[in-house]
Image (cartoon, rainbow, N blue to C red; front, side, top):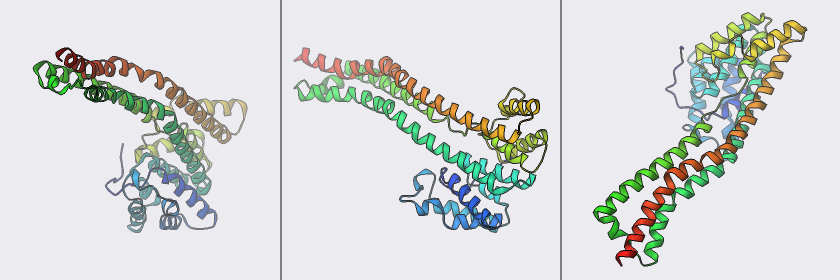
Length: 318
């Protein structure tokens, strides 16, 4: 894939949705596209919100200034947006490029993509709530071995001399290894679910944008694939354009029934996001049980090796 420069400071990923919706409103008011981006960057969403988005990828103001600077240097709005670095911005850049190439109305395209990206932010917030329980479980169980040592010392059975002996060194090494493995295993399970960041069905809405200029379905899909490749939008896999995908099914349904293809694409995109949210909730519920496996296999043995055995040996020695 060919890419764009990503050396500039990145803007908060969630701001892509707000900027897209703001540009759509400005375009409906008659502002030219490049001017709409500059005006939206002059009053960024984080400047109007308490706290802003500064914790998510550098100082947000610097990133918005970078968008305006790239436009002033002669870059197109789509290239300027893609230079922000986050996947959301590359998806927004693809939609902008498709609207320009196909002659589709830009404001509805930006509003649709902005709404989809805002839905992703809501999904992230929901995921954070669902993962709070498993994350607290990992932290609590990981703290048991040192707490057991502290409790033994408070009861008068000092395990420190035991740990400084040769046997204690072996126990300390084995327990530390088990504890580290259990914590890493549990966090890997959490990260596996956290990495599932994408806008489900976004390829359908990108083709919907390409169809807005009157292109036939095949040409619209090809134009969307080319724009995705040009900007390196990793959230849109090329497998989505295969004959077995939802896009091909929607095109076949439109051709066989005579239903408007654009409406079918939007309805299928909404259904795909609903299925993604259901999968997220199911995965978070299963994670609450799966995270107990590394806790039982690694952390609890580490609790016995680090917290119980040194105190028991100190008791027997006393």
